[in-house]
Length: 456
Image (cartoon, rainbow, N blue to C red; front, side, top):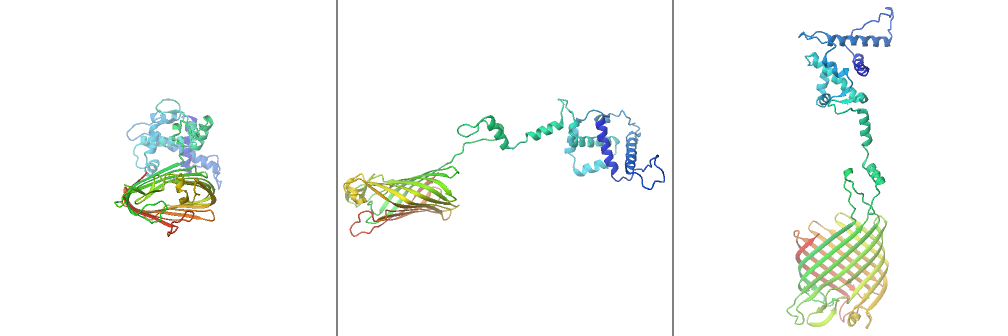
């Protein structure tokens, strides 16, 4: 038996010795005087230890009832006589033994054979060596090579680095590309994708409408039934680091026919082409420094019933508003709002048809007009319930002499994923244009429609 194994076995026996034992026999040391009232503790422990060793020797070397002598050449001692080895059977027995089974096994309960007790004691000792002194283990049972558990454990602990440390190590070895994306990260067990800060959304609808237009509507038109097509495209950028760039393209075009109109086979009752671009830099929390550009015109010529005169056309008028100010953004689960307040605004108006210039507040014989003032634009969306939503746009501009106010309201009642009912109401006030005789500056456009709707 090697010194290491003997030491481990001795330690195990010493632990058993220190525990209360009914079978342990007190032996008075011969060199101590019989008259000593309190024996030396060290001597007592040594004496009990020697007695315990003698007891174990008698147990394992005593003749068996089946007359099979257990001698010092017993092959079952081979596990302890050689260099400590990592035995698979010991590990399997340890992992497969329940706590209560282990307890009774150590106490020798239910064991009828001395050989089983011997093997169990050796396995218990080896388990203790594996757990507490792994540096003594120098080989494996399968003989594929030597193994140092102490070194293996330390190397394993060293390799258990965090993912952050692995990424830092990889960045040092191979700097990231210009796009900021690490390459060949499959060995780290992760997939790195370039972040996408863009969000795209498209709404399409084709609806049949019932339309009401006041007699003094500034683009002409009349109340009737019609067909309306609407397309809204959003492309918004947000890098999550205070920069946002919102882009929105709105296209609405509706046609109507009238039996009483002998001049036109069809006419427009809704016509809008509008592009809104807004760049924001976060100032604090929900507030952004904002510069916004809004531009709008129409697609087709605008007529009135039985009247060949053109009241509006593509680029007649064309309006563009550049504004600088603050934008308040709030986004909740069912409600979001963006309110841009711009004390500095510059408005440009262009009328391609000179004969229409006075109708849109441009001097006769001129195509353009510049105005300075202030602007407020509020866009909101409220999902009132699962089937009903309300989208609103409030536009206000003043040059401190005249005022233009538009309030667009769209109520959608969802029937299913592709069918919906829409109610659109659009009051408008503009005293910057020539007023028709006997008419008010207040105008109204209302549409009730039923049709198909799709978004993605």
